[in-house]
Length: 115
Image (cartoon, rainbow, N blue to C red):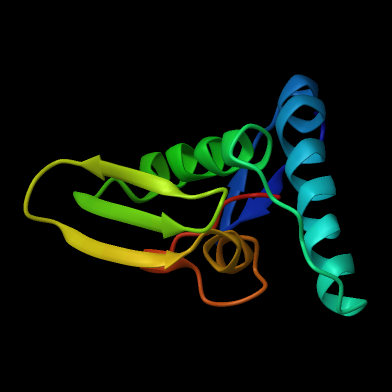
């Protein structure tokens, strides 16, 4: 893509494939979360669908911060991931974790992920 994208204060070059395959999927998912919250409707999540998206987001987040940690995300889209030993242990709601990474709150370990 001809224009750099700012993520966490760093300019990144994205491919068109990354935009279409990753960002537009995450963005649509996050807007679904936003709409459910705005209309005070329950958010129906499943491990088979939402859990796959959250897993992708978590793996990118871990690669961006590069620190040892154990992350436990609660809820239907959650799970547990671990990188290295002796690092920070975090336990958060899966949707709140993703909202923080997307700029809708404080990102865990100060590391944003593009949505």
